[in-house]
Image (cartoon, rainbow, N blue to C red; front, side, top):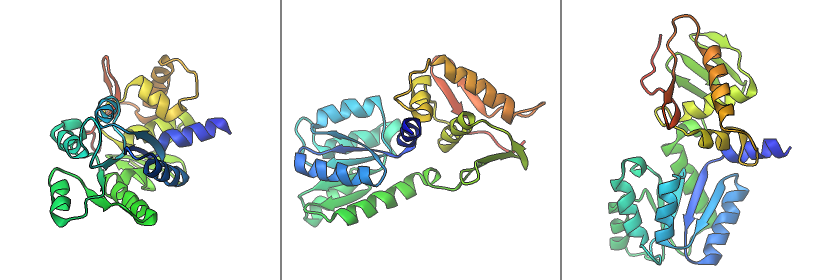
Length: 242
């Protein structure tokens, strides 16, 4: 039961809340966690920048006025970085004037919510933004070149041929296919596929990658998995039909 819960949490969309008003941050976190999201809270803008440099969430809820660094400046810097230029950002602020809303959107915020806000409305905006930004996170099927992964039936096909994967190899392939081209370290894959609570050596990832490769490629078929020396593994974004 704990293992299943850890895996579910590891694959849930991750939301970072940067808000210096504890009551608002707690309200947001409670409702987002109840909806199945993984949530992290930070109160200061400078601390948020450090955290964003360490790990990029699936969505950022960002207060306009923050100690350390303002939310406006954080958003501007995120859009200037290649790794975060498409990160979904909802700006949360007490500023309701049209000019201020335009200013927030002009630095790259995807949406703008004025305090006091309706929690159901904010939740709807979160879901809508995640659907637009990462449709693969909610899609029933993932298709990358000749490989099709069906989440409902837990089956994988290559050019119509069913591939026989173990449950761990299935989750590993699913995670890599969600973001083709992105390189995941062994530690990140352990977190996402096995769960943070599981004490497993990072070399275990190499073993399962090897098994996955044998299962999805035979003969002279192209291997869609890339090994990036010193960094980790990715699903090749240039992978096309055999």
